[in-house]
Length: 324
Image 1 (cartoon, rainbow, N blue to C red):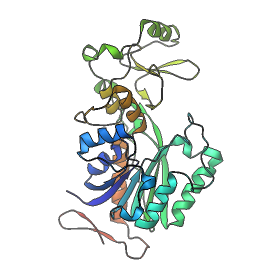
Image 2: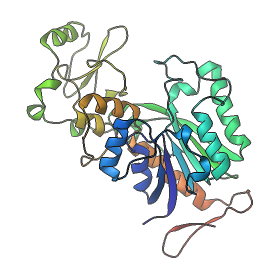
Image 3: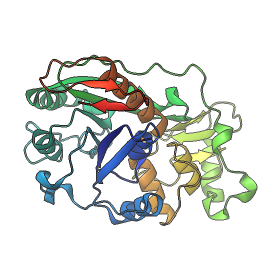
Image 4: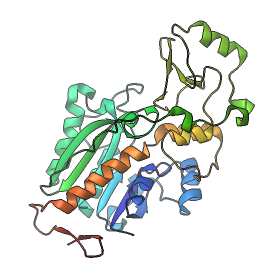
């Protein structure tokens, strides 16, 4: 049952879209420039997203209630060059800003890396927040971890929520019970041999082990070469080495496991090479975490009366959320 409309910008393979569709939203526009991501997106949603958002006229984007965007994070990532920006002009955030200015959706959800908050001593995030507030949006933000929302992946991301008007909002509470890694792993007997590390790599990893191993587990090698044995995966990374994460110290994650760790359903088709799935998984979002935030966003729109003239919300007798 459709209760609101949204757009899916910097869509990747559609993680944010799945989260919002799961709570009744209808996607009216999507944009993603990477051709492999477009191929995966089309295979699941049966539509190809529009291309480069910088080349799309905001006026031609359909009206929508909520704008969503997991905009590129390399500029702000600890592992990237961390150049950031001192102004929104010339950055991809500018495209979000210009679309918000023209289309005036009632709310938005933006996602980026945790380091965005502290980048350049907080000045980068301050520019973003001030830019959004200057458009009339009440802005909320918080760093959330996928581990707290039913996924065995330590993935911390900043979530930025905005409402056109003075709405109240609270981020979702964390889940007390952690996910079981075993439920997300494929049977070793069914894993393609190509995913197993070489004998040389396995010996090297085991030789550097400083703690007692347990199974199932994901072994994480940090930049210093130290090995941690964990009951969950560290954050999937688009450009990580193939041996960055090893299941039980012997094999790499399969394509399906990469998708599962982000919350993608098992009927999500795998239509691109494994190297691209690794990239797509690393660039995607934790679906259950986004969905939990999306529920609170819709609840905020439903319960509060905005101070901004002309935007009111009520629940119809049918149970649908109506924007007035």
